[in-house]
Length: 155
Image (cartoon, rainbow, N blue to C red; front, side, top):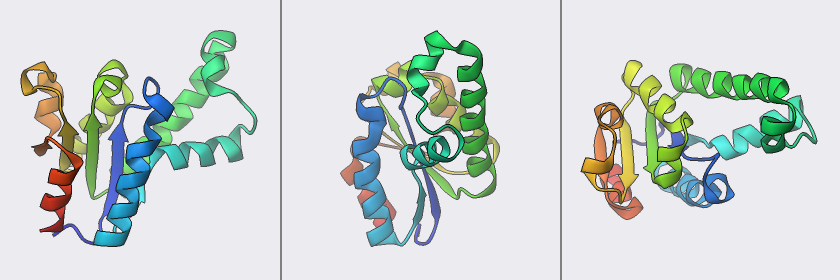
């Protein structure tokens, strides 16, 4: 059903432990091996962006130390992600947790996906009544675990 698709891995980074790398790496490997999907992993793409555009810059420190440069870099990251969502992504997998709720990027990614009619599969243990209505309005399917998502995608 979802073989050979381009998948965008959406979820908290700024306020997440290790910027959400663990779940993305694990899911990316599964998607590539089991479903032959290509994956847009924002952790990898952000690292590539910094290596080519801003090598050696400590982005998180800039928020306080150089707000003007921080805004320029943040704008570049937003452009990168929005272009990917609009032009290359077939579906979005979102991990909705406290880090995603606290930040803004995930909400923006889900809104872009909705606007461009891309399915959004959300994995969350947060009770539905505690998820903002806007976010639920952007979501195609909800899953309580990554295992449940994988079962669905493998069908």
